Image (tube, helix red, strand yellow):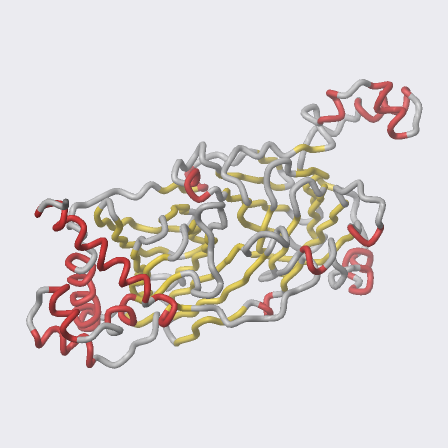
Amino acid sequence: MLTMESRKQALPLSWVLIFFLAISLCGVKASSGKPQEGPVVEKDQWRKLLVTEFGQITALDIKEDPEKLPYHLQFITLEPNSLFLPVLLHADVVFYVHTGSGKLTWVNDDGTGTIPLRKGDLCSLGEESVFYIQSDLEAERRKLRIYAMFTNTKDNTFNPSIGAYSRINELVKGFDKKIMQAALKVPDDLIDEIINKRNTPAIVHAVSKQRNVVQEPEASFLKNFLGVGSNSNKLEKYNIFDHDPDFRNRYGWSVAVTKRQLKSLKRTNIGFLMVTLARGSTMGPHWNPKATELAVAVEGKGVVRVVCGSNNEDETACQNMRFKVNAGDAFVVQRFHSMAQMSFNDEAFVFLGFSTSAKDNHPQFLSGKGSVLHKLDKHIMATSLGVSDRTVDDLLHSPQDSIIFGRRAWPLEQLGREESFESKKPLIPSQSLEL
């Protein structure tokens, strides 16, 4: 039998169960779009979930395997001094701050907390957390731009039917006055203020008066309805620009963040990556043994070459291809598929993204002293390639010992001719990869 104390502790949990029943009715959902057949989703194909004068949210769903639920990516943009109002997370999420600054406030079972956000920050929040974000009013008036990837692990998946999160104000207003009164233990006039308040968009201007109207009732809700105390709790974060990249030379740099650098990624099982290629540079051929890469081009344009990793003799099952990527486009490369990324001769190519594993990925490069080719028996490799042992010797003693390197100038028309790219052809059958 439950004691009085245990009943008291269980009460907030019972309200949470009721709370979740309302999610399917008032969750923030992405409108369904037609699945893409190729590895590229162009900028204008991202779904617009919200557009206001103070910010916008766009979204994209990507499947790495037909048997799995999609990974859900969102791009949140806040104008200076704007507020993304509180939401309840339906899945774990990893945030990356691309530009601007602001602060993130959250509430979960461990308490509440606020951390500053700036360019290069990575952090994560668990499902059932409630959070909101406010952008700073900077002298430079930079927008706060945040990329968010929602988890897709065995025990914690993004469910497209209810969306990535629910807005707190909609969930609160979904209950009648008696339930609200019993849960919040606040005066009737405050309940009336919440219930009768007109609906506000998810992103608003963060003026002081509006903060009083919007945040204080919701803060009371978070504390009383969810049974969460006000103890402060620090959220772990990692800034990629506070640390040296994994690799850097005059042709570019690359960085990967795993659970080794940010322990909270272990829960989400999501990693982060960012690559900058100077003009006329190449990230050498490599494959990822542990994760699929989901990337977004954030600057310039480039070419991605993908070589099939399947030994299936059915030619329709996998196609080697190359495709052009422009700023704002997203693309995916599956685990074990070999790839190379190239910038054009006239501008740099920068892309960032997420990997589907938080473990150390250890990409396998074909070139350099760390190449897997150096670890194989020379004669066996010569037989595999159908060449002489001497040819393999020459190959392994190449002076090239870099994963990012320059190349001889390629004519722009060779790289830039639209008809030379296969961006509309599937990397694997369309039913196996949906973007």
